[in-house]
Image (tube, rainbow, N blue to C red):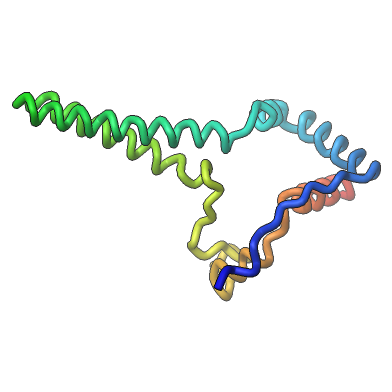
Length: 145
């Protein structure tokens, strides 16, 4: 039976109040940490990670072809070079897999006191708020002081 809890993504326009609040948060972010703001603004990190993942897969294929070439022409140096290329591609792919696919870690997320949350990752995931809500809450706490 298919999973009935499929994630549906719906774009909902922001109200004027929410747009003003978002603009205030953006201005506060730029004022507080301009370097971080420019880093966040410079594009989609997931797309860059996907390109690196694709490059890693390509390097693995090229590396394996070089290894086969090193075996066909009895040349140890060529075989070692092909292995290193394939290994580098695999490392590049593994390091970028999580951010390219949006995969979630399966380990226990820390609870409020820094200890793993009771109930494991499923309970922590259920309690986790969307990033927008966390940013708004942090913004309110900062400026209410």
